[in-house]
Image (cartoon, rainbow, N blue to C red; front, side, top):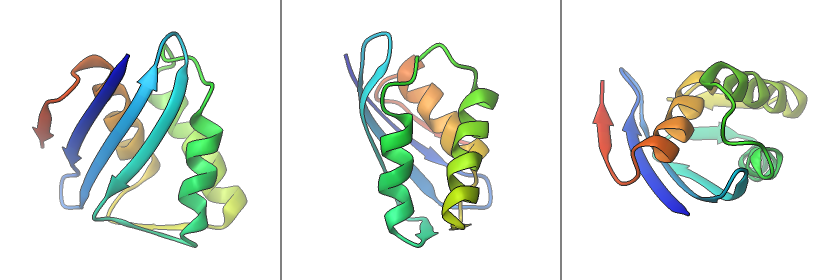
Length: 101
């Protein structure tokens, strides 16, 4: 299946998730108007998320995202691991909607 979701982080930036999935994430793109430094960290994050089971909880996804952030020494501006995890879960659950909190 193919899914996309846009999520406006409260007090932060817009995250856009595009992914293909079955029982696992086959391909994922994390886009938006936020910043991650170094920029190469986003590709490493996408690579780490690819192949994961889609039935992971939001907290499990957030922990994996935080693990990548730490290992890369990445700084996230306008987003955090939990907001990216939320956008991923919502893309799988509510393909095509936009959520603003």
